[in-house]
Picture 1 (cartoon, rainbow, N blue to C red):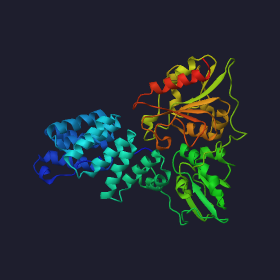
Picture 2: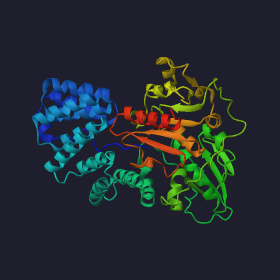
Picture 3: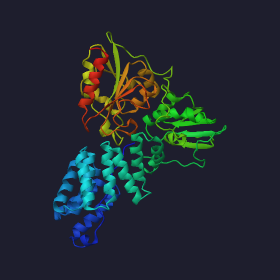
Picture 4: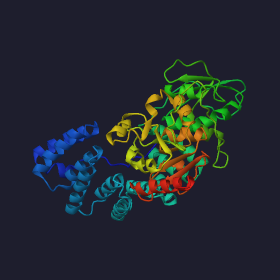
Length: 468
C-alpha cells in the first residue's frame, strides 16, 4: 500500500483573526471547517471562495482553500492558493509545508524538498515539516535520510503510528525486513484497512502441535499472491492451515501446498485455535532478506482452468501485456500507463501481443485502434486460475506493477515489470531483479512520470533477445 502526507489539515481557528474579520467571513470560515472535516470538500471550497471574495488576500483563507483543493485533486489550483498566501505572508512555515505536500503529489519532488526545508528554517520545532520532508526524501530514494528524519519525529512523539508506518516502508525498501515488518504492523492504523478482531490469539510462531490456524488475506490480489508463499512454512509448524482469500483467487490457490482448507472471503469460518493476517507472517517467522521464501513456482495453474491461446501463423514469440492497475489504488496515478506504450512491441515481425488486462481500461484496445494487433485474453478469464493457465502458454509477460506481475512471478514465467520512479517498497531501489521472484526483471523510471525511456529500454532488450 502507498503513504499520505501529513498533516495537511485546515488551519486552526485563530481567535484574534476570527474576531477581526467581517461576520460573513467568520460564518463562511466556520462552516467551511465543518464541511472539510466531514469530507465534503466541494462545499468547503465554495464557502472559502465566498469568504475570499470579501478578503481576497487573507493568507489563512488562501491556505485552507489550498488544502481543500488538494483533497479534490485540483493540485495546480491548490499550489496557486499556497503561493499567493506565501506572497502575502512569506514567513509562514505551515503554508510552505502544505505547498511542499502538493508539489510532492504532482511529482515535483526537488521543489517539495525546498519547501519543507524552508518550513523547518522558519520553525525548527515544526515536527510535521520534518515528517513531510522525510516522505519526499523517501520518494527520491534517499532512504537513510528519510529514516533519520522519521526517527527525529519519533523522539518527539514515540507513539505516532503514521511515522512508524512510513519508517517501515523505508526500511523494507532498504532490505531491512526484520525491523521493517515489525513496524509494518502499524498498517492497521491506516484508513485503507479495517482490522478484524477474534477471541483467538494471534499466532506467535510457536509449534502448532495439531492446532488449527486461520490465516486471512487483507489487501489486494497482488499482496495475496505475493505472500501466500508463506503458508507452507506455517504448515511446517505442525497444524492445520485454513486460509481465507478473495473469491477470484480460490480456484487458483485451492490445493496449494500448505493449505488444508480454503475459504472465500465472507464464508462462515470454522473453529480455529490461533489466527494471523497474511502479511504478518514475515514478522512472525522472522525472515530477513536472505531467508525469505524465494523458490518459484509456488503456485500452479489448475489443469482444468483456462482455454487454448490462439497463435496466428508465423508467430515466433508470444507476449502478454497489462497496462493498468485498479483505478481505486492510491498510487495508481504513478503505476498505470496507456496501452500506447506497448505499441512498439507490435512492430517486431513474429511477435504476437495478448492483452491480459481486466476492468475498464480494456477499452483502450478499441479507443486506440489496436484491437487486431493486441488480441484480448483478459476478458475471457473468469478468475486468476484462468489467467494463470493462459499465461503459461505465453513466452513473456510485460506489465506495470499489478497483480499480473505477481502471478507471473509466482508461476515462474519470465516477466518484465515497468516500475515507477517512486516504487512500492517490495521492488526496493536500483536493482533490476527481485528478491521475491527469480523470473522477474525490473525496468525503472529514471525520472518521475517519464515512461518513454522505460519502454525504450524494454524494446531494446526484446530486440536483443530475439536477435532482430
